[in-house]
Every structure is written in structure tokens, then in C-alpha cells.
Length: 226
Image 1 (cartoon, one colour):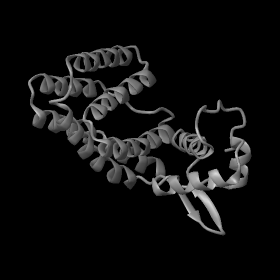
Image 2 (tube, helix red, strand yellow; image 1 turned 30 degrees about the vertical axis):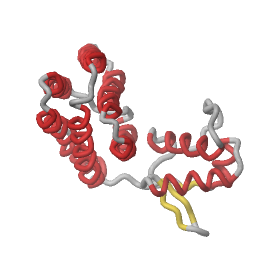
Image 3 (tube, rainbow, N blue to C red; image 1 turned 60 degrees about the vertical axis):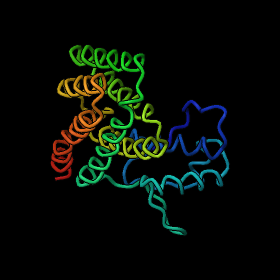
């Protein structure tokens, strides 16, 4: 797929940050396709920066598993394999469960009210078949909890794994997620656990919420590969 020429650049970022965030976005949403070969020269021209920040950004993306680099030979976007779902979902589920457990005693009444608002909006979007909106509301729900956990490592590593999940769904389903109403029911259970000051239950339901779709995603990816 041709590298876009007319994207909206981000402001107040260094050249390296600008390159990193834009390339990461293009990889996650499928603009740069799995297996596609890229060059720092072409990317630098498209981004309007020099080759050095692009190379540095590619190195960061390689450390996150989005790019494969063979110095002096080629750089390509990593492929997506069906078993990637089985590799990504369990650690993400455990991190999100930990986030719920840590956040439970820290969430304010205002934050819990916001979580309720997000779930209600999710349900409305799902019923109206606005699945893209539902997916974004689902991500906002989880992000609020992860931020409330006040642990930068949980936040950072969870965010990278979520990008891999989002990439699978963008590339293969042409949308950021495949939401289900069952997810809303589990979100209400998590909120109830928060209100009852039950961190262990919140963690248990959160873990289930992430592991439930894993086998479905794996099967769909496997069927598409075949």
C-alpha cells in the first residue's frame, strides 16, 4: 500500500516522536500492511523529516514487535499469525486484571460515575449498530481503569499489547474491535465490584472480559489464513 502523503501531522513533537507515533498508527490501522517492505528514505519523505529520526522510530517499533529489521538488507512490517492472538491476550488479560485490582481502592465517585456513563453509551451504540463507536467506548472504559491504577508500568505495557490486539482487528475486520453486548454485562460486574470495594472480584471479571474473545479471534484469524 502506498505511504500516505496527505496525513495531518502532529504538533509539538520531536521529529523522532512524530515519526514513531505516525508509523505506529499506520501499522496498527493497516495502512502499512503486514509483510510490507519499507525504507527509511521513503518514510522520511512522506513524514517530512530526516532519515535519522525515522531509523530511531523504526528501532523503537521493532522493540514493540511491529517491525522486523535486517541491517543492510530490508525492513518490513511484521506479519500477523493466528497464534499471535493466543500470545497477546493472556498477558494483556493479566495486566488488565492487575489494573482493576490496583484501581479498586483508588477510584473516586466521579470516576465510577464516568465508567457507568461509558458502559451506558456502549450499550446504546451497540443497539444502534454503531460498532466503531462501541469499540472506542470500550477502550475508554479500560483506559480509565488502567490510568486509575497509578502504575506506569502496567499502563505502558498494557497499552502496547492493546495496540497489537487493535491491529489484528483493524487489519482483518476493518474495525478497531468486534464488540459484544456480553462485554457490557461484564463491565457492569466490574463496576459493581468497585462499588463493593472488592478488588479480587474486579480483577477476576476483568481477566474473564479479556480472555473470552481470545479463542474467537484465534479461530477467525486461522480460518482467514487458510
